[in-house]
Image 1 (cartoon, rainbow, N blue to C red):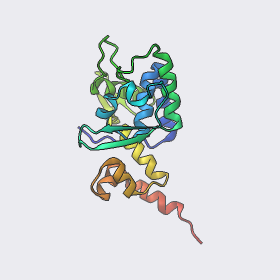
Image 2: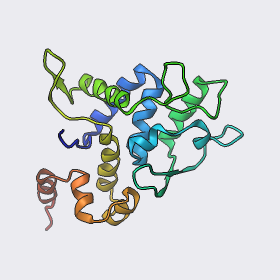
Image 3: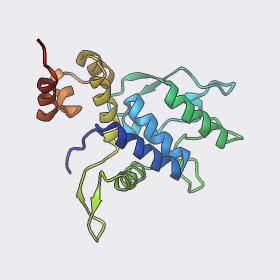
Image 4: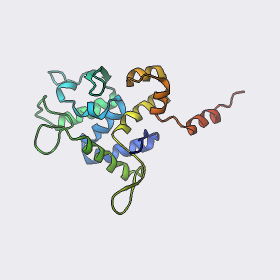
Length: 201
């Protein structure tokens, strides 16, 4: 399996969001939450409405989760974009059972969608916006989008907007700067851009 990369182009992110919004608010929220909070998909899928809503039904300003992979407690904060999509989704799901999984399966049981289903949702949208190409048999021949793309997209854009590597290491629970740089997909092309944009004097 190839290593997935972040979605670096903002226009492509917006196009992906539009495709997913047209499918359902649930799918849009899966994408928007994933690219804005930096959690692994396993931690996103286990979220319930009670994790993000107060007993009175208000959206919490932040959420604490225990990471499945590391066992560490992580806190993520809910920004304006994420909050707006959550508000829409909560309205669509009234009357709301707070013990329901946010990304619940549509099979009628109170279980979240599977990691494979999340992968399918993202890859189908990625194909619509041209990030992924398939052959006649449905096999991917170009592009590699996965559930981890969401977390990497968050980290890449956080870094590009000025977040320090040290802070990103803390958020992602990484142990070295080099690992974080590899993780967010900093390429030779990115390095080249720094030099080309540097026209001092």
